[in-house]
Length: 193
DNA sequence: CTTTTGATGCCCT
DNA sequence: GGGCATCAAAAGA
Image 1: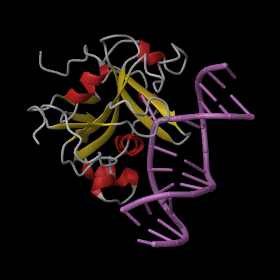
Image 2: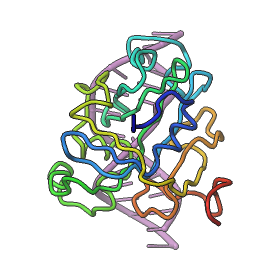
Image 3: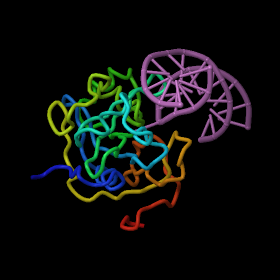
């Protein structure tokens, strides 16, 4: 069975999602930036245990955990199956499918910013409250593994105050569609230098 | 390029 | 009531 292996810890799943293709309703692109969150991680919504808001994170793996950040922006996560409370936040896409639709949703804009950020990504794909709890392994979602191992870089996560030093942010090396640049020189051991 | 700040909804204690 | 896994616009360099 080809497909993303969701039965792995979030920090590995997050790396393996780099270079994958994510679409929703036929609109989307290549995943170029992710972050991992874990139940033992003070920065994670799952850290405090199951609540009404984070219930999806403790449910079936492969489902979408969608939450509202700062009262304005939706953020999309994939629940992983290695253990309860783990998930991967999709932080940036390189738009490849439905470019004009994404442009309309976000207003005429630079292609590089259509999906560069968790809030922008959700606005471009029209993902919101209604998608919370849906399986990302079935239509209208489509998640396709990277055709070949992608060169991945890692760095500290963004926009959090707790455990901010944890290097659980991952990006496609050299991509021009990241939400924010990575620290120069930051690479993974198997990445080309 | 950088830093700063306002908008805004909901969850938890 | 406090705090937040964000974004865009504005202003300075």
